[in-house]
Image (cartoon, rainbow, N blue to C red; front, side, top):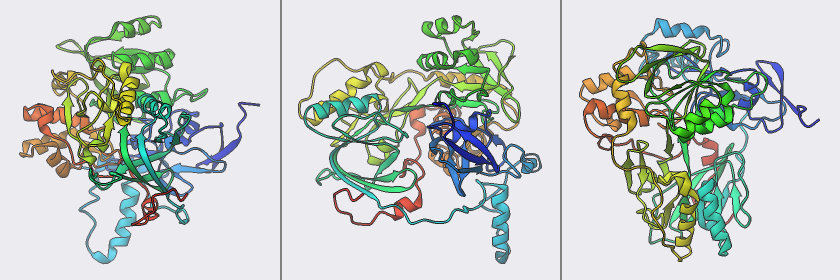
Amino acid sequence: MVDAPTRRFYRHGRSRAAQPGDTALTALARGGLPSTVRSNRYHRPRGPACGVGFCTGCLVRVNGVLSVRACRHPLENGDRIDDANGWPTARFDLLAALDRLLPGGIDTLHGFRRPAFATPVYQWFIRHLAGYGPLPTATPVAPAPPVVLDRDVVIIGAGRSGHAAAARLVAAGVHPLLLDRRLSVEEVPGAEVRPRTTVTFLPPPDAGASPAFRLVGFEEPSRGVTVSARQVVVATGGYDASLLFGQNDRPGVFTADGALALREAGPHPAFRRAVVFGGEDRARTVLDAVGDRVAAVVAPGEIRPEVVRAASDRNIPLYPRSLLVRADGRARVRAVELKPRAGGAPFTVAADSVILAHRRLPHPQLFFQVGAKTAWRAGTGAYYPVVDGQQRTTVPGLFAVGSAAGVLSSDSAESGERAAAAILGTPVAGPELARVDEGGLTELEGYYRELLHEPLGPRPILCPCEDVLLREVQEAHERGYRGVEVIKRYTSLGTGLCQGRYCLPDALLLLSILEGRPPADVGFITQRPPVVPTPLEALASLKPAVPAEETA
């Protein structure tokens, strides 16, 4: 039978069935919304949120290896999937009492240091109270031989724009290397495609050298990768942003990416009655995919006609120009409290999840690390690289295409083709590509000005990875700290495993409001390598000097 399980895995010692192609997350979600981890300071319950391997909501222990993202682990027969932390389990965690006993959270940096001879005992105790669980129990294995590559053109990202750039190059006789972090990638005939691979620039490029770029990273799960390249096209795409509201870290709060990843969860889906937050194209994508599980559409501003039609066809209520004040529920979302903007009485909508589909942001880390000039664009409230008509950045040999460069989806493929033409030395002229609006007021700035006057609950979370409270950032501002880099160092905002992807965009808008200056003046945190957390064994396998050829 095609649908028959071909493998089994173990969860809390019990055997469970898995389908072909399952990740640990999709297999766990067939039994309903999984709860696998507790937050590191307050032991608040967490659940999968992004579904694409950046947040910390689906961390698990796989065969004794800790802090594995369930959405990134292709399930193998006999795998043991255990909770990242929590005692006895993450769902029924007795240590959650600390959330009430220690209202300031657990200080894992400054406490439990004296006397020194008791440090091992303290560390054992602390790791059971905070962080992401005990030390790994897996038997260390020798790292796999590294992958060493030398190519003329490397394309980072194999989405629409990266695919278009590769196809144009291949047609002209150039065979690029495509690197993509996704678990599986569509092939490009004539190009070398490597999925499950993440790289970063190290060290900064040298325009006078050949090759100008060196990249280092890993192929999942832990194989080191080094790449030498003469020209690089960054096509890393975008991701769905988070949102500040009361209890926004509760299980059942997903980005649109996460909801789409969980839609095939089987007879017991992770959500049945969702509130979609957003009124533009991304909300329409969610409605087309899971509209039968949507209870309402809420938007900070007006709702586009195509979204109105899609919701009306399904008899879904619409709430434009509304605040999402808070989610109710402890183990997971049970309802959401809404309020019309500019006045009006709050009201509650029964729901088991919130799907955030209000804005997609670029991955800017590579541009900051390589020294490319960037500029703030208010249309989404994010930094994008400065490019010319051929998608060239201010770094010679480096190109930015697609949504990573702020190009709208309608012109995404065209941006890739233009970059390829420039690489081939045959630049093409044409109309200016449609891009994210540069000027004006980011819609969420006005939205947050109203939201901050609402009762969001006792401890609204601004940074879920590190359990940094909204109140802590406000207090830092009151004490005179200014700028997001200083706030980061004072509160640890943006220093978690997601590396600031889900807290910094909202923090920039919040600090803009508190400091009374544009978000671009608030700055951005220093973007240090790597792009995502990298296994030390992958880096250890890389030798200081390697030949410019593939040794795998």
